[in-house]
Image (cartoon, rainbow, N blue to C red; front, side):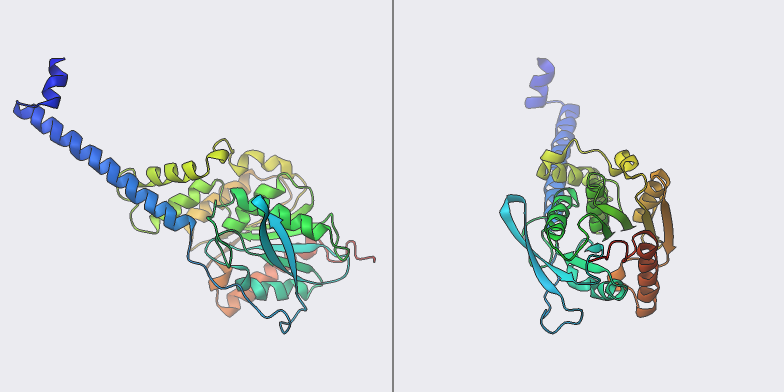
Length: 312
């Protein structure tokens, strides 16, 4: 009791010093938690980019497809028709991007007779909400696939998916439980959403502060408590035996490249990997974009031909 009394009402110099240190540690932890919470808020609600085009005048004859996601929230996607009855390639944009930034990739695929579909995830484009870095986005992808499978001009059993970071995680998570996904291109995929939170904090320059990353991950986990028991994607990769996967790794994004490389090693056959110098399709120069598009189109032509069920 004398120790507790001394800490409550310090009289000796060492007790005063210890009390001061404890107080500083308490306020440091409190400040770190507050900053981390604010960072997570900024990270899960990124600045949105425009995702509007004039469907009436845009090449490729796209039409709008309406579907609903969790809690009956409305979503709209753009469907670009290819050969009737052919497979559909769904494009899943990356974190901080939008569907409108993938239109050149749409054209490359549509030119080879694929149906192509793209939409915006929560907290991107015109959609409200917060990103969960793939947990709920995988469910949004499933809702989109359900809406597409109900059409009479596509193959309802054969879909390909391309995704970049956030979109790649959502695609892989959905594919592990959805046999309709028959081929995937996974650009800069990560294994757990916490890895993207860590990268987001590092990009603010505040990761060097003690406990900052762990506090941010804890805040993110609180926001997504219902997924606290969700295993890493790599734990279920064996569900995808006989589903061709192309893992793309960008040398200028070494952290995500290392994660994608580890997942490639763990993935079952058939699998391929491509190492490119500059990542983020949206930010590539024209030459790099053409080379990238050719690699993606070639993969789908090999593993999910547009004519595989175009019989109607």
